[in-house]
Length: 304
Image (cartoon, rainbow, N blue to C red; front, top):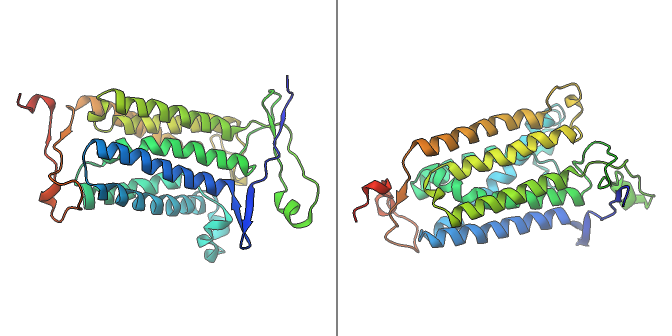
């Protein structure tokens, strides 16, 4: 039996034209690609326009980057960035917050639903969050390769010793400084997100639950943010101001998402199932709202 695991994976894969190419960036790109593939498959099965998929991912990429960056700036480090406003835009130097990304995505889907699908926001969310759960797993694996966002010291045999001085190692070739064996909370979260993805994916394809608008989205919120809330108890604080808080910032921000998810799931079963008629065209973007506006009806309204 191992007493601990010494984690020595280098965050950098290679250097290209003087720029570091990191595992984190690769995992981020893979996450978006797989999300595009999964969502495209669902949209094609429902025979909606191809343009809907392309537009959605443009919205999501922008919203995730901007929302996650601003979430870090305002939720965790405003004291610093308020004095260094020019550094807010230096996203390549790190500093992203998943709660900010979630808020950005919600706003993006609201705009997307108004301008593109003309359907309820929950229709988009129920399909999109399946790939978002998988993306969350890849992002946490990126955090693992960056030796960041790990947990408290532990005596459990799967505790990881992380390296804390990668910049000095890269610049000066000094010896690595290791942490005490610590909870690999990146892996805990990655496994929870993977399990969430599997459950949501099977629910979508194997059941009719997708017609209960908002249920899949609500279950996603509960699974992702409840696991985040619980794992925070063994995770190190991300900022110094959290030291004296009963619940840290990550937990406080997770509570509204969990409660919102429960409300969406209850609401989904209080309302009749929703079925959309297929659009008349499947290749072009709508020119008029009436061209692609969906007729919504319950199953009981369908004439046999």
